[in-house]
Image (cartoon, rainbow, N blue to C red; front, side):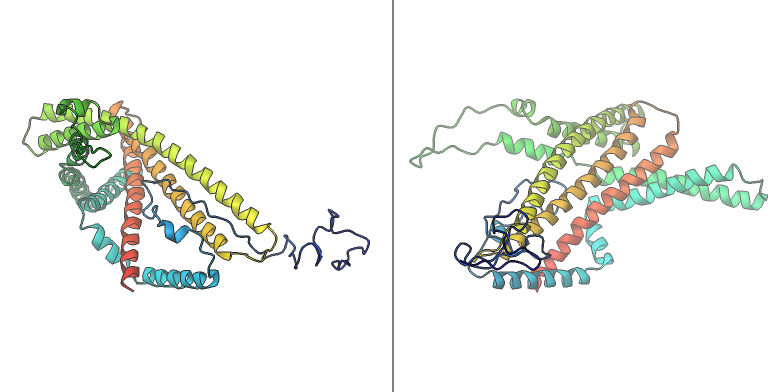
Length: 377
């Protein structure tokens, strides 16, 4: 059977020649094969492999299995439906305003804590730079110096009171780890294969459950209790000496939990990077594949969506890592009593931590509002 060569291809070349690998052969190929180096090569059908790792930093980490699986019945119709859904979602994003997000964010105690933290450390940074600049400025008039001293005194007082306010907002945080431990303590009954309830295991004391609980949960529990004791001392319910000891113990717990969270963050980020490389290699293999009679463009669309999800998770994990590093620097000055550059570094790291954590919380509430508006369409 004769072979139709590409322009510029020698007529004597076989279709097995590595220099000209693609040709039209009605006997062997049964169709036309596109050059894999073209701008839009066709895709081949395959089963999608979806990464199901659950990330604590992403707000859209759990996608339904039906949305990610391949449906080869009518791929063009599925693509049109996906396009309409993305258009509705983009329209919902345009309708979500910043004031709506902040309103929902400030309804929660965590959101108010982040807002007060931004104000507190912004004042601290201003006070630091104001003090550093005023030392190099010439002596001013008595009236201006009096106004400046009163303003600085008001800002320092506001910073101190905002700190106490934030501590009061996050009181009773020990209820969350305590609930997790008590849930493990109350074990559900065990049933046999016939459906009858099996003999329940011997009841274990509560102290046993506490001693065998997860170390991070126990660390969060004791840190929250120590923080509450320190807060009670600052508002006058307990003695000053008791509050100082509880505060120092809470700082050590914060230091240890920050190190643990950094290790967990690095492990999760490495898993995300490996999954992202797998998807990218799959996309590359699909783009270099030849055409078949059952090409499914939905496969590439699913992989693109999965890649965007992994990239989003990787981004927020990096944000969380930076925030944890700022917290580690901040608490190290409290734990080890470092004095060199204490005020400046604590102010800057505190403000950076507040910005990063607030951006994450803002994005979470914004995605929640977008999802609500999308479902209402």
